[in-house]
Length: 187
View (spheres, rainbow, N blue to C red):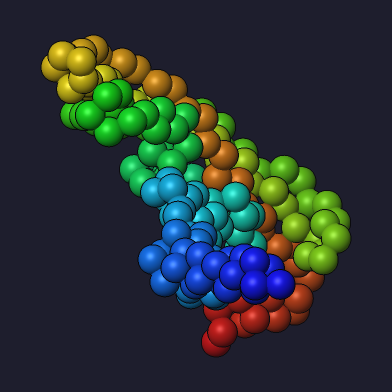
């Protein structure tokens, strides 16, 4: 009988010593820290801060008798760099890869407006195609500090195609056009 009581008491003491020493993985309950890789925050930031990169804006209608609008707003550098393939994550001091001396040139490929058609949830509108060719010149750098230090730097060129298409509302009558302009501009 004493042996059984000693075993139970010894088990309770061992469990208490594990929780008191920090050896239990969930000893802090809900406040237990969870290890998160550093690239998770980058993915979350891209997902929530740049959500308008892939949305189609809706613009006011094109006025009759005026020249058709041109695609003059080229993609900005941040949008172009986000469209590029990602750099390998690597292991710090063992294998690291990054880009240096970035130069970007943009070229408009397509600038045309389709005839009006009906778009669900929008109504009659014209699709304005704006396609850009972005050429990125950069130096690709690969570094390692283990087992011996090495740095490889080579010039690279990447071409990214970006579509900045948008819709122009279409108003068949001048009254509707004035109404659309008033709603779109807030005046």
